[in-house]
Length: 316
Ligand code: 0CM
Ligand code: SF4
Image (cartoon, rainbow, N blue to C red; front, side):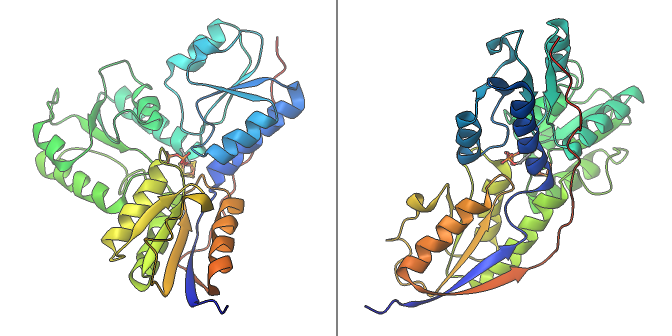
């Protein structure tokens, strides 16, 4: 039987970013150095395949430090942790390695610097997301105000409108965040902040690629996890850029082939925590059903790499 033709637009950049790559390498290095088990506080990155693979190699994933024993190393996830977490690990004389992405740490430092200058911080982020919890947790509880929407900006109660700064989560929608920043600047003209926001290069580039790809494609799939903020944003960006069907899939099994019936093109991208092996699995699933022609939609080239700490400290 002949297969129907399909143009497969492949977004570039897509998939792993430098922070994810570094965080995974840190867990692998810790396992190599100290052997199993090594504890990881929270999913090292938001991807089940990555987590399952590291679990098979001897990592134990827990949500809280209190779920870790004193005498095994613990690694903090790429999303960052409140200051209280390393402080508690040090108090318990635990060995810990911080796999927080350097671009998240940069925001932590920014927030602290503004607070030291007497400014109250407003964070733009998603309530309950570990990165938001970690960044807000750089300062004492209650000090940082959270806004999620322009509506929140209208009602937020600040100490002194003349002494404000804002920071953001790194994995937000660039366009939504611009609206929230504009609302903050309109209500609080003296507010200080980064040049635009703190969204990282990987998030920005993946959204740009989707904007270029989505209008051409009959449907679009984002390989990523339901708890991955940057991956979910790619689905929204695709839908807003004019793609009639945009869905998140964790892997090929999740593809709803009935919903794709009749398409002649598909756009594929992946969140910053989705490994290339899963992207290839999805592409192969299309090749099995269609006569696929791949067309790469490249809007940027990335050459960012973060150093992995060379020496991991010995357990006491
Ligand atoms: O923050 P997000 O939910 O997008 O995390 P992720 O693990 O999917 O992606 C990488 C990161 C960070 C920080
Ligand atoms: Fe770092 Fe951005 Fe990757 Fe998050 S998505 S780990 S902030 S580079």
